[in-house]
Length: 302
Image (cartoon, rainbow, N blue to C red):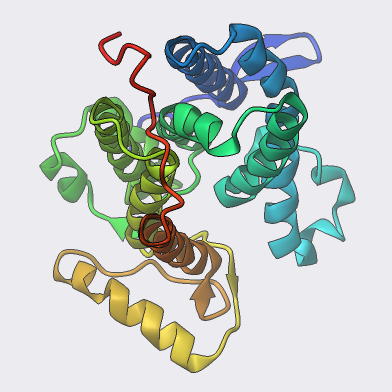
């Protein structure tokens, strides 16, 4: 049987220089996210240069954090292939690592500028989830971050276009387009965050809602994947995570894990969901969430 050729992950080749789709897609995600943050920052009376300067700190920190996080959990491979540690164009950027790196760099930057961290976190939360929605298409181009085996009929039943179905054919086997599931989930999250900020919640709650929404979707979608970063943990923890994921079994079977019994992303996602909920409730109970997202003297209709 003949299968359609997969999309070339290299968009342009100029002699020895290759421009990968992954890089183009990630660059597009950054620029769109920056544009949205600058526009929203103007409603808060913040100069666009603040966000441009912040990107100089945050983007490198996010890339380094994402790569180090991934390499740390795949060290058995990378210590034997050290040259591949910097090969980010091949994929292998862990979103949670990138988020940690970005938050640390962002917190340091805003402290130096004297701007409240949670104010900036709220402003950029929609940009982050938009970037994640777009960035997942880089995984699509690289034919990575997919789920377990499925039939072509299953993919056709999702009413997916042929070009997408064909890209999910890897060496004659079709796989769950988990990148697509997460991208759609993140787009829905973007809409929720944009609506939420018009209701003018307390400062920090848009960012905490982002953590909850993204992490909830990531927890369930991660269970379908076959390339999860994993480790061997206590049986009770593995049982807890499997139990929480079990409603998904009504529709899907979990993806196989090559080793380990706990998916790192599921454990981190569950922790972030709980953290987001606790922070919202605790800050309100202790009277710490006094400032609104957008102060009354500023227009909320822009």
